[in-house]
Image (cartoon, rainbow, N blue to C red; front, side, top):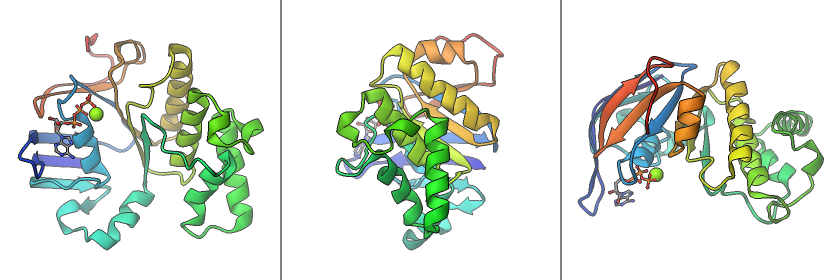
Length: 228
Ligand SMILES: Nc1ncnc2c1ncn2[C@@H]1O[C@H](COP(=O)(O)OP(=O)(O)OP(=O)(O)O)[C@@H](O)[C@H]1O
Ligand SMILES: [Mg+2]
């Protein structure tokens, strides 16, 4: 599913963000990525959906070897990956419905299928009644739930979330976590970079701690209490 061997990443400005990463994440796992600011968490997850490429080392995602993946084939990799950001990245002029449908239209679904899938996913995140709203008319938590709906509407094999609750109040964050647990229970792999001690210590899952571009701890679910 996600296999990295001796992965290094140095950005063009000379900063080395990842310093020898080795990891094996299986389909269906729920994994937190934790560590201080600048540790390399975002860079680590960006390698998984080919937002950045490795400087050296081997990366296999969903059986695809990243070193052999041509740029024009990247959209095929991304079909199986839903990505969620801290700042939502919704299209401001489109309604909630359209923001989600857009993800399906680009892969040429039939209009009828699109409607059913968008409404099903809006139901899952509890926003069926706000389908016609535009992002500006929603709270931060609601906007984040739209971005989750958009990320999962294609039924991706994995969801990568980079600080999805970073801008949200605690109650809303727990709501977002419930949605993640629900889609994880259906078999979707969840990779979530977070600074939230509360979440990591309450909803116990595998924890990968990154510091100075290296994995310093990798603890499977519930084995230890974890202090972020
Ligand atoms: N596009 C880029 N170009 C150059 N350097 C970068 C780039 N993106 C990140 N870096 C550097 O790589 C290092 C790791 O950054 P990264 O964003 O992966 O950290 P992070 O753990 O996600 O931090 P945070 O918790 O603040 O989000 C930092 O030193 C950062 O300055
Ligand atoms: Mg980051």
